[in-house]
Length: 202
Image 1 (cartoon, rainbow, N blue to C red):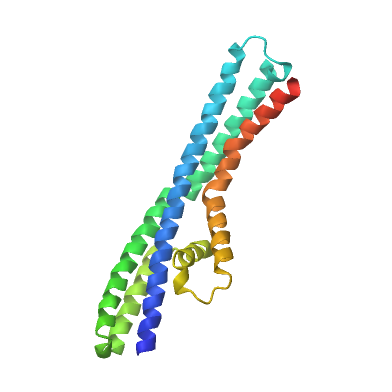
Image 2 (image 1 turned 60 degrees about the vertical axis):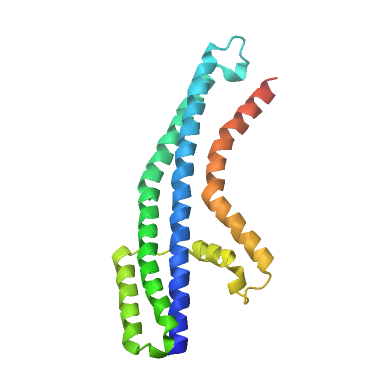
């Protein structure tokens, strides 16, 4: 019974933590996707304002400016459609609510561990029923990245992970790329292209 109690303790602890991490990850997606769309929209406005600049290089001709703004506008529309379909804010809220409900079951199990000698099979069956009920209610699952971030944050509790420093570094880089990297690409590409055009024209 003690082993089963510890198994459920670890399972609820990891699931609860991973769900909160997933909620935070999708929250960052929501934040940076909004920032990306806003910045690209600013780029479009700035490029349109170039028509008022005298003595522009040939690369910044009216036709090139028009094509650039059309291209960036298409990017904004595509990103907006994709993000709307992803529903990051909705997913973040669902993962957070799921984590909170699992946390309630986890706290209940913690109280049972205090009096572990009096824990019965019925107590664990009740925990199992409540846990599976929450999973069916939300019908979502965190990714392997969320679980690995949880392990990274509690690395001392996972002595079986070899080369823990490399593991932590790898997970950190994956998380940053997942939540920031793709947006930085959209943010920096227009700036890089503009720099190349200007450099090429001088």
